[in-house]
Amino acid sequence: MTKFIHVVDRILSRICVTLMVALVACVVWQVFSRYVLSSPSTSTDELARFLFIWVGLLGAAFTLGQKKHLAMDFLLLMLDGQKKASLQVLITLIGLFFASVIMVFGGGSLVLKTLSVGQVSPVLGLQMGWVYAAIPISGGCMILYLLRDLFAPTQD
Image (cartoon, rainbow, N blue to C red; front, side, top):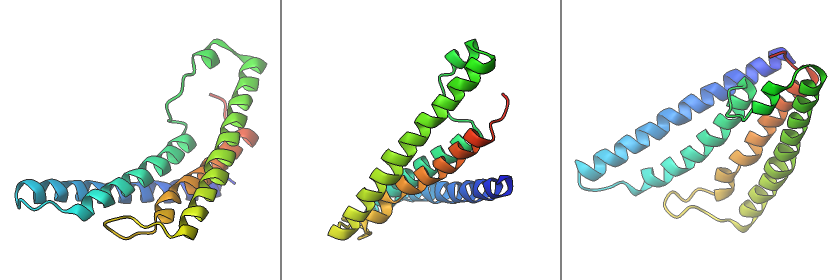
């Protein structure tokens, strides 16, 4: 399981870096074309929005896996022993519920419905279902990390 998680970490980090580089390139080109060429690029504006969605969601999954996400852990810091371990399990179970029901099931339903009606983006003509696919993919990665934390917790 550890090797598999390591492979997922590497894949997610590389995808996030690649998407972020593309996002920065889109924004730089948008600014350059608007202010230097006086002819703003409409496609880079839309592409930057879609890249931002993917970077944000996949980055959230990656940071969850690295345990570097934003957390209000003041209650956890006050507890120790069995109470702390129980609260960590509860937090992980809540995260699993959210990632499973909202992100994977709800996001997957959104993707399927959007693809079935054929909604496309106005400028790029991309199927919006593929843009929304970041939700269930990110949720699936979160589930993987949360299951790791549930069955192989680390001592902080």
